[in-house]
Length: 637
Image (cartoon, rainbow, N blue to C red; front, side, top):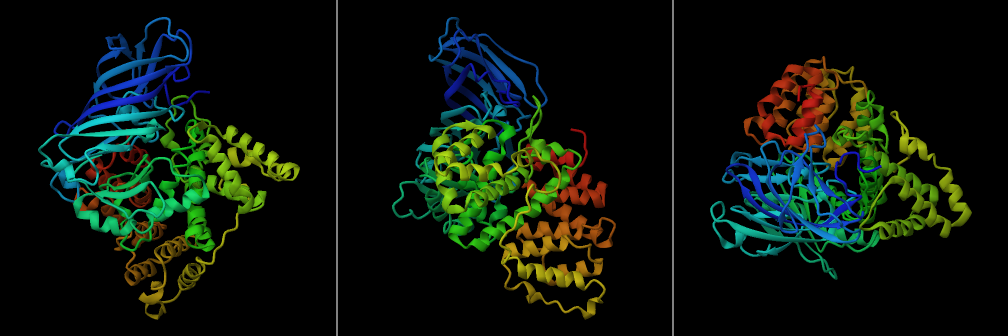
């Protein structure tokens, strides 16, 4: 089956390269310009090329430099409007043809968020950024918007603010004067980029704002470079947070798999409305500012995003049904990196934290059990964002961990991982193709014994199983979790004790890392909710309701709102809602891991509070987050 989320005819004719010539219009909040596709024909006499679009204003089309007839079909609510372009007759398989579409984006564009200057750190200039995964590149440009189509691209972007893309900058130089020395916010500069490695369309990305660059120290013996982009107000904090670990993570990942192919690995810290922790756009990972914890405790997100350079950006899922091949493999390798760089205990600890998130999301889909599966049979035109959860990440990572253990451990497994990446690098594959290669590898490198081990895995249960449990009970190294478990157990045992007689101290958490504090608060959620007086005392003692660490703060709100009818839930529901909408600043906590979980928890306590808080700042959230929060709060779209 072709991609269930695309209307493009990419099996008959497919883009190999696209040139974008864009002008960013901040005043009218549009990108206007052209997309010129170099298309390879794979079916004789193909009569048209079909692109995915969504809410684009198409002005004209040329094929081979001549005006061409086209039709924009009626809009599908999920897949958008198919753009059909007529082609000359007699085209032969293997030949190339060029098509240019002149167009502009519109206010309805789901891929782009335009921020007013008040929503930025500097408060002086507007900001633009994109988010194209899973199916929103079509709202930014006419493309064959399927991960089955991998394209090279070039871009010439004219902007009065510095512009970044998911490609290698050709001019002006990143390490030269900001905005090529011109006046930021006033003078137009054309930024030129080239992406020589074929990537899926969801990795096309753009950001433009008052951003500055600082390079990280070169890693010994490496040709690739790393650096950080952010608003000037954050560059010192961002550089400190990420400069120590980024190149080290990337070099360690190369030792596990194969060399990094993209030449540049830069980071961009975005304004807080960015809806994800990170997005692995090629050459330029987008990051949420909630990672700037000030103690480098949240840099593991970098390990995850750079691992996508091999799993997702390199070996890509063929369509949304196989999304776990991206995220399950990336999560598994990310945690293996933690073992290589830190200790085996850190790897186990990360699986423990992930398992709690997996459990929460499996419960969220009890009424839609199809989304509890690893391999989801999407219907044509079904919204893949409805299935977005921890399931592909953590169920997938646990399957691969189970596979590693079943096959005989890392010494036996890692050579296969390298062969898998080498075999499929640059390709888009399905789960069945992955499994066939796995069996083929161990037939050659292990024989009947390894095949018998693979046959012992209940593949159907892992791929298509539903419910709240994994097919196998997984055991993890819990040594780093023990102190958190013991403190949570002490609090659970204290529920009948008067507050004045409790023996807890502010120093209880002094030797806890941020992740141990997270596990402590998550462990408390596994017990019956504590009395309101105890929750209040815990919040006051440990300062977890006012911490700037968003991971800890989220877990505290989940813990304190666990009994929706309790007095303390009413108190902290108001505080939690105010936190995610930015307390009147317009600087919302847009990362969906935080805002969606908080809105859902607040909704259980006080529906009106949740809805009113969201309505107050809904236009400050990214369009993707806005759409999904509206579903969470059962609002009409």
